[in-house]
Length: 461
Ligand SMILES: Cc1ncc(COP(=O)(O)O)c(C=O)c1O
Image (spheres, rainbow, N blue to C red):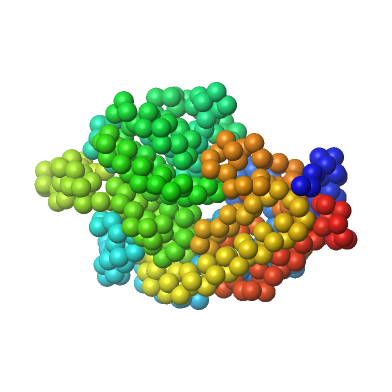
């Protein structure tokens, strides 16, 4: 196996960052100007996380391509960290959203398209009842609230390494002693996480059962295939054990498929006929319009309707509500966007194309990595793939954590940006959209070959 020298990696990173800075004076100036008015220099704090030292300022994006304000073109495998999985400026979405804007965007009234969308959500994901929010974070907070309302329990159990958006209960991880701590550098606030959260390692049935045994967990919030800290596949039977353990202890089970929707038209839940109590999806499902969706099972819905009846009696109409919602949730604009996404864009043929590309790219990337003797692996789930700097796919966050190399990861990101390829800035994830082509994936492979050759000193880059 090839070993990489830390000093050499740091030197290479400094060289690539200098090259990036030189090639992007307009982006650099835009970020500098942003410092005066944004807390973190750009409209969202995530945008400062790109490895070049400042984010690209974008002039336009189309399909799987993007052009920055310095006039440079990129193949975009980041796709807005999944929000752009439909491809940028998709014509069907543009037309549907523009058409709805012209007829009223947000009305506090449903439109006719809502019926089709509700039916399609059930057909794809299996759960009978749905609600809209304005983000996946909001959808997760909504289901946590319902789970607490109907169970009377406080705690939320998540798996070590998870990310579920701005959900306080899920901002936790396990330290090497197995204690609950704030995850990944998140700054402490006044919340007592020991009171509201439990964390166990993914793929560990014994730890899961032990954590659920006291009967104080309202819900388990999980991805059916973890994607946010490396990518971990469930071991055979793990999801069945998870379902069994939650049922045995009266705990509700939420599958958050905001990322794993990449696995196909019905997510992992639809594909594998999983049977969660709640389902959450966001990002891609709105085609760029902020949308979160939560689904509930028949049993959950009936328990909820006991607490909050379906039709408000007149005398309580001002007070009987769910405690969450969002004025723009379920807006005409959102519904029009989701209708276009599910009806015309993220269709079974589109997923077949994206998955085929991702599969072939994963295989070819593994071959390049093996040729160079690097101890890395590539894990794929439908349209998404992740490169990790560890020989065998990790089964949980502790295994992945031990392999992390921040310098190497930053170097990879900026090296690829300097050669016209973008991947999601927080980890080494690539995502296909319906407009991604074999030329785009060939570009990744070409740069990967150069990168591996340069790292290992085998051949010139
Ligand atoms: C699994 C999962 N759930 C929820 C979210 C939150 O999505 P949003 O930021 O759109 O609320 C994310 C974001 O990355 C996610 O990966």
